[in-house]
Image (cartoon, rainbow, N blue to C red):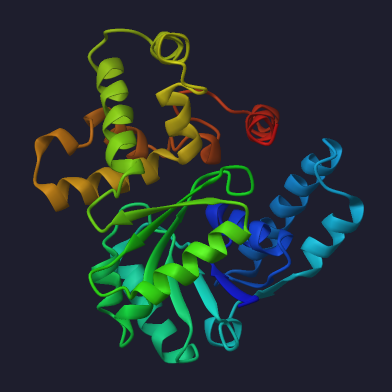
Length: 295
């Protein structure tokens, strides 16, 4: 299983492609936009340069990693020979269902279909295919080349063979796989997102300012990054989408997104990716923030 297709060239998609390619998998990176693919490749090269500067990789390893990635704007062509597909598109149920219906048509019968979804039901995604036993969640953490955890989510029909294969692949990527059952938010975001949402509520209620809230959590709780800064890094739109999925899934008001978060997303204040969220990010500040994650 050395032929992997990654769908989506955004933050998570290019990180997943980078990681597989670095471990000598042949990667087909797929996006509907050639411009997005070009940006994704540029990001991968920048991140490899950071790793090179810190002597974590050699020039030869950088060149080999980039050579292992081929880009496609056609889903059908990109997945033609894939043994594993990892979908890393926007956290939108309708979009994911369409992608998986298409993957079911275009992929070989023995291809495992994985989603990097951070909250959406794997069982529901799998039901859009004729191979639910071969559909699984493979939730990487950001930044993918650095973070060790992979949540592996079994849908209702996911086979033990599929799980074992994905678990072994994760280990070959030098990741730590953790088995998780299929409930909204899984483990990581079921715990993380209410904390982020509560930090936003704390700001919204005027209890303390942005820096003060993050400082309390960093110095008092030994968090490497405060919850508001982390929300900026994840993307406030992504946080909002995950909270909506959890709220709809559990029907529990504790998962209802804070009005401040909703308003910031509507205003286009999405965090690092938009240049402004709870903090202000100029281009130089944005680059510095991302670079810190690769230290």
